[in-house]
Each structure stands twice: as C-alpha cells, then as structure tokens.
Length: 228
Image (tube, rainbow, N blue to C red; front, side, top):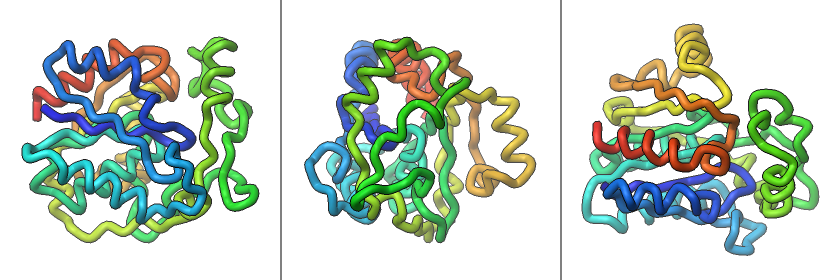
C-alpha cells in the first residue's frame, strides 16, 4: 500500500529517512512529503497551501492509501480524510490529535518576523524528549525549518462527516493508550470521539519516534496499513 508520510512542525520529508527503507522492506510504498513552507523555501505559505499539497499527493496515486500525520500534521492527515474519504483507506496519527473545525492549526509558539522558529527544547522537556541524547537534539534543532505564520495560524475547515468512517490508528509515543482513551472519553478530542474505527497503538518513545525508533515505527505503520 502507498503510505503518505507527513511530519510535524519544523520538519521536512527527510524526517522519515530511516522509516522509508524499513517500510519498503515490509512491502509498502512510502511517500514522504515536504510541505510548502517547510522545506521549499517559501516563507509565505499558508495552511491552505499545505492542505493542497497533501491532497495533490493523495490524488497522485490511483489506489487508496494510508495517510500518516505526525504531531501538528495529524490535523493535515485528518483533513485529507475529510476531503477524500473514499480515497484515504486509513489515517495513522503519531503523537497528536486532529484539531476541530474553526480552530487554529498549530498556534502554540511565538512567531518572529512572520515565521515560527523552533523554540528550543524547553517546551519539550520530559516525556517528549527524554529518549533524545544531546547529539540527536543538536541534529534536530540545527535542521529545524521555521514554519510560516500563515500555516500555524491558519484555520482548520472540516466539512464531510464521512471522515468518521475512515479507520484511525492513534500511535501513542510520549503518552499511553490509556491516557489517550481518558482524553477522548473526557471530551477533549471530539474528532476522535466520533471516529467509528479507532485503534490505539503503543510505542515506547518520545515525541519523535521517526528518529529514535524508526524500525519499530515502520513495523507499526505497516501493521496498521495491513489492517486497512
């Protein structure tokens, strides 16, 4: 199965470099996506531009596919399911949950000069980054791409309730499946509360398993795709 890979803030398609060969060995066709404004040199990109790039990638394959979103890009994967509910066979969400309709995509960090730079490791101390050594932290931070403010402040628009029919695998890195179930049950994740087919997948890692557990992550994604 084709598997579209969308990394979160500050990352381009190279974030999946260690996951792609493992997925290929497992018989899948991974497609790592570099988003507008996150690797193409455009500081004026908007959320609409990123959504358009995701949908273009979805439409470029003749078969149904699984769309994988990491962190903030979980919302992009969910937007793909909303816009192409018949084409997206499954959505896998890694370390994040979809934003609801009418809310900002990822307005979490301070912008400077029209872009949102990587804020350093302070906001991610604890379970998010506990599996990253100093070398890994330095590599991620030095490669981080400032994200255009037009992306982070863009509003999410969901329009088709058929998205709730698309199966979802929620990959739980820095949090546990039990915690995720608790958040959903408490009403904190309304989009996933309405999902009709939701599986919880545990992985013992921090927020960036594509860097720290790429082989295990690939196996989990391959298993999710096989279920689709």
